[in-house]
Length: 90
Image 1 (cartoon, rainbow, N blue to C red):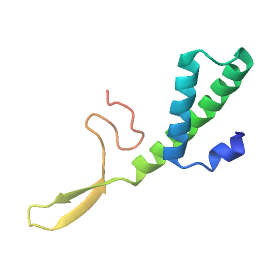
Image 2 (image 1 turned 180 degrees about the vertical axis):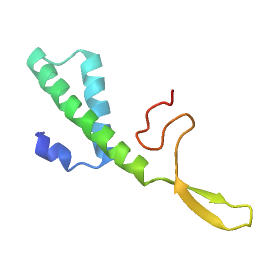
Image 3 (image 1 turned 90 degrees about the vertical axis):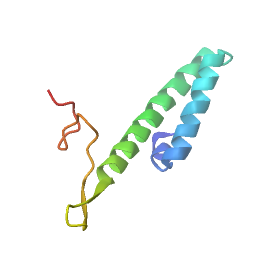
C-alpha cells in the first residue's frame, strides 16, 4: 500500500491495518525486507491516525448549562491543557 492509498483510509481502517502490522512484526515470521517495508507503512499509518485524531479533537465542543438554564457550547479542553495548543500548562 502506497502513501496515496493510505491517505484515503478512514481512521478505523488505518488503525486496523496498523494493528495487523504490529502483530506481524511482533510475530517475527516475516523476512527482513518485508519487515522494513511493513515498518515504513506503519509509520505512515500512525501519522494518518494522529492527524485524524487531532482533527476530531478540534471539532469537539463542551456543552454546558448556564446558571439561567440555557445551553452554551464552548471549546472542550481536557483538564490541564491549554485550549490554544493543547500542550500541558506550566
